[in-house]
Amino acid sequence: MMKVAVIFHSVCGSTYLLAREYKEALEEMNIEVGIFRVSDEVAKTLPQYYLINSKEYKDEFESINVIKSGKEILDYDAIFMGSPTYYGNVSGPMKMFMDSFSDIWVGAPLSGKIFGCFATAGSQHGGGELALQAMNIFAQHMGMTLLSVPCSVRGGYPAYGILHIAGDNSDIRPNDDDKIGIRDYLKRLNI
Image (cartoon, rainbow, N blue to C red; front, side, top):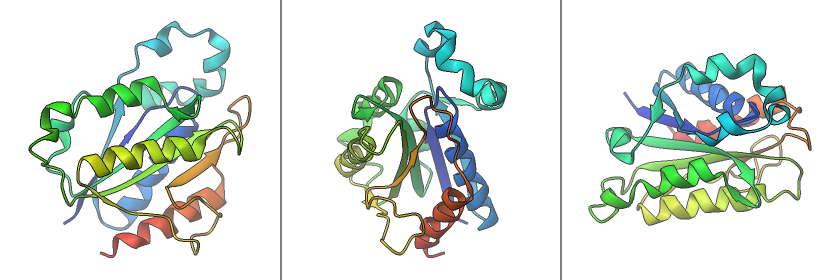
């Protein structure tokens, strides 16, 4: 049985909702799924208006295990990472998690494993594609095989990964089209 890790960072909730959708879709495909969140000490210090839209999901996503190192996912066959977009890049906590792989990078234990990613951004021009590219470049440095998004996937996503536009206030949640797009995309795992 294939084993897949879904790793995410979320502050406002939309990236978490995408991660949850990945988990549910993969489980429907009879795939063993581990879902993890990256550590985020900064979120605890943010003004409350940043967190207002995540209140209904906060307890749910805070109950998910925090992943601290790439060593924790070496026995997975595929990895899907998700991040909000901060200034045209992945979030700081996601970048710190990606940097934690430096101690295993030389041995290339992730070489050949499947990699896919997803991101959220405030607007279509908010740098979401750059965040997706940053995660893909990370995966390439790890020797992973990228699972790109073909144009046949419903939703018109970029080739780099699934991108959800959450709005300026991060209050636009993933919808049924996003759920269908994720499922179409995951069919590419060919299992």
